[in-house]
Every structure is written in structure tokens, then in C-alpha cells.
Image 1 (cartoon, helix red, strand yellow):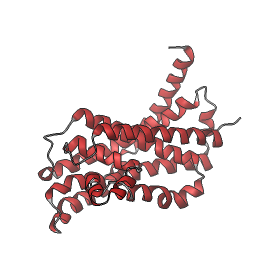
Image 2 (cartoon, helix red, strand yellow):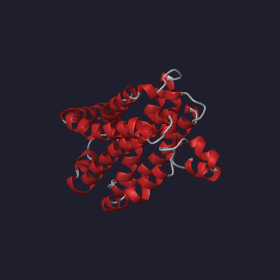
Image 3 (cartoon, rainbow, N blue to C red):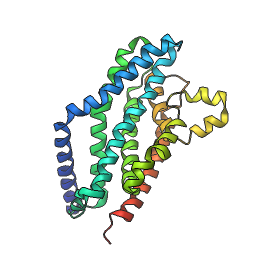
Image 4 (cartoon, rainbow, N blue to C red):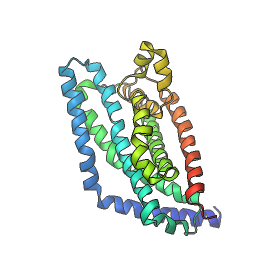
Length: 263
């Protein structure tokens, strides 16, 4: 390891350690923010919808799809923090003066958000599945595929919201992020329907849904946990998520050059 790489790695670790320390100080508030929607989703999809006639086999996949809203909620909170800092507090300008490359600097943002989201969401989603154990079969769960999908999902949401926070202006984000980006991607995804069933009903709709990264995020969770042939395979979802992450990184790079490059 060269001296430059070693210096960057040390500063990266200091920045990450600072973020983790701040995260531990607000874990209580973070869990409270996440547990309310979790309880609502468990009650709705585990107990209320079955009373309206939802088949038991649909409960687990629809519940996993509904958890996309939790990941989006956490990601949007991250987006607002970064966008507000760029607009008002300008702590990021101080970080730009540190002897660390932008690649390492923004990697610390991404890894920090991945850790925060994992700490908040993974235990709660797991708890929800355990509560709904009568409707969930773990017989065909692939632990390796599940871990890979979780990591890729965390990386996708971190890069997506960071790229948007830096690429778009603050006022645009406040007014347009939900109606022009999040809602269309969520509505045209397989979050609340199984992709194969949507494709069987309308191949055109099924193809359109493949353009939403949220489709692969949730279908990967379903196939790695439930192991059914009804869902897109984990390998397909991993490949698609890798493609969307690459797009996020390109947009992030353009945003950094546009907003934060002093030259």
C-alpha cells in the first residue's frame, strides 16, 4: 500500500468512526422512527389483509415488498441531511479541504449510510418475518444469496440517494424528489405485486417494471428468502442492481464535478 493510499484510508476511517459515533447517539430515535411503520406493515399484511381474503402464500412476498418504503424513508432522510449540508451548513466544504481524494471521501458517506440503514432496517425486517412465521417458509432460504442481496440493496440505496442529494438543487429535491423520482420508481416496480404475475397479466407492464431498480431490490429479497421460482433469480437481481449502482456512481461523479469541484 502506497503512502497516499494509506493516508486516504486513515482519514476515511476517521470520518467513518465519527459517523458511527454520531449514529450510536441517536439509535433510540432511529429505531422509534422505523418501528412504527414496521408494526403497521406487520398488522396490515399479516392480519388485516388475510381477513379481506389475501391468500397466505402472498403475505410474505407482499410484506417484503412493503419494506421498500422503510428503506426509501431512511434513504430520503440521508438525502436531506446531505443536501441541507451542501446548501447551508457547508461541513462538506471543510471535508473537501482534507488531504483525501473525493473517491475516498464519498465512499465514507456511502459506507456510513449502509451501516446506518443495516442497523435500523435489517433487525426490524427480520423481526417482522419472525412475527409472520406462520406465513413464511425459510426452508429454501439461501443465506449466501440473501447476504449478497442485502449488501447490494444497501449499496444501491446509499449511492442512489447520495447521487440525487449532490446532483439536484435543494429546492428541486424538496418539491420534486418524491413525485418525479421515488413515486414513479416505486409504483412501476414489483414492490406490492409479484413480477411474474404482473408479467403474466400484461407482458408490457412486466417489461416496464424491469426498468425500476426497486423491482430487483425486492425480487432479490423474495427469491433469496422464499426460494420460489415465482420470483426473479438472485443472480439476475444482483446483476441488475450492479448496473443501477454504476449509473448512480456516474450521476454522483457528475454532481460532484458540478457542485463541489473548486476548480
